[in-house]
Image (cartoon, rainbow, N blue to C red; front, side, top):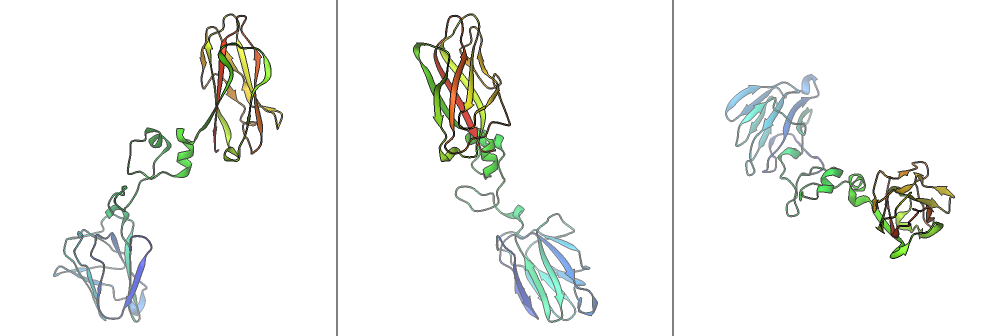
Amino acid sequence: FTGSMDAATIASGTFNLPSAPFGLIEITGEGGVDDVLTDILTNGGSTTLVPGTKIWLTNVSGDAITITHNAAVIFLQHGADVILDGPGVHIIGLQALTSGLWVEFWRSPTLLPVASTLVSGRVELATATEINASTSNVLAMPPGEFSDSIYGVRLVSFRLFSSGVSCTTGDAAAFFHIPAELNGMNLVTARAAVYTAGTTGSMTIGVKNKTDGNEMLSTLLTFGTPNVIVDDGNAVIDGTKDDVVTDDILQIDVDTIHTTAAKGLVVTLGFRTP
């Protein structure tokens, strides 16, 4: 009842819906001589309805809704007020058939409780920003939004030179094997830090996919004087050469150094599923 639609057919007598809050009722008929859905009796008062009229049920949990059908009239009895043409999108549909009344019903999500770790119910989907905040215990997390959040980034750090060692130029000062868990991801961040800043001139660092022969940065990581950290926005990742697959080898190249070389160097790369 809380998920897929239930249905029942009655020729006469009383049909009892489950005792719980319900959503919108839509009165529909197939037309012609079999269409007898023209009169509703509610709480002792008579209201004439035509096919397509909508009724909003405001009954609370525990109230029983009874629909009685005969050759000329439908009776609707319940324990609370009825509002004609009320809001809602999930319906209970009533349709007259030759042999009786066809009743279709399902619960409106807006009448379900908010889901939590302890309660089943309706959920709202979290955005990447809300996942980053990590403060909600009621939002559901779509995989795509998770991937777009900070938690969807896989980080790998390389120490090219220890804290007391001066940086030198050279290709493949560090290299990294892409495991299957990173297959199909893209390089999305490139950052670096030195332990002691260099002076005069600059140091530039590239990232190359050795397997493909592609330079992954269109603008290299660049330490000026006296930079200790270069963060996102310093380097520019080439969006046409940012993808990696299983068993690729990535290498870190130090292309230039300061006149007085910096000491210690760490490079951090981030990967995300596109």
